[in-house]
Image (cartoon, rainbow over all chains, first blue to last red; front, top):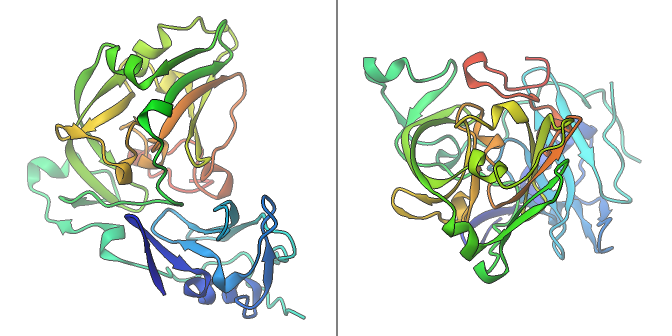
Length: 92
Length: 218
């Protein structure tokens, strides 16, 4: 779903479901994530997703704090999970 | 229970390619070709990239600060900032997402002018630019001075639009554009380098487009 917030293009976490599934090896959109700043709990699929950037950034729907960052380079994928409850990305 | 299938750190396809993201491609003339770094394509529009919501700090609450390894921090209100000696700049800019835009026209204050207002500690070697919204990016101090960077508040003769970083953004045109922090609110002078928002997650710490320093290890 695309949601206009002012002049921002904001998607929701479902828009990056495929990327998250490739990273985690499973559907992550129904996993709960708790904002480390304000404590708001959302399904990952409901987080704010900013994708027009050098990487993907998922933010809290209440306070817009960064909850997950993903950068895909030609050689590897970097994932920074700052949300509580949500598991860290597996390493191989 | 979630299953880890060994795909945690691997190459995966680009999830999104939108025209607004990559910009409208334009053919480069021979005179322009030498100004386009390797791996880049020319655009005529000005793509908007953002990792978060666009801050809209009222100008009466806006300030710009230089802090860290300085004898006394310096701070300017919006009104005071506009009184600083300003210059027009015409620069080519290159984004790590592979678009290059030539002859962008800015007005703003050279970082040299800002640093003249403080006394730098002899240990000063790196700068972190910090912005509304929490964004940071790091640049070696020697790459910000001697006319190499400025804080812009006008673009193309108009106030810098919020989606492009207004009311003011740092512009460091010789590095990939993620170093040109939107919504910049200050410079923190440091002894040691501290990777910023993207540099800490796979992007190159330096970011020279002519060397294609896109990612960590490039």
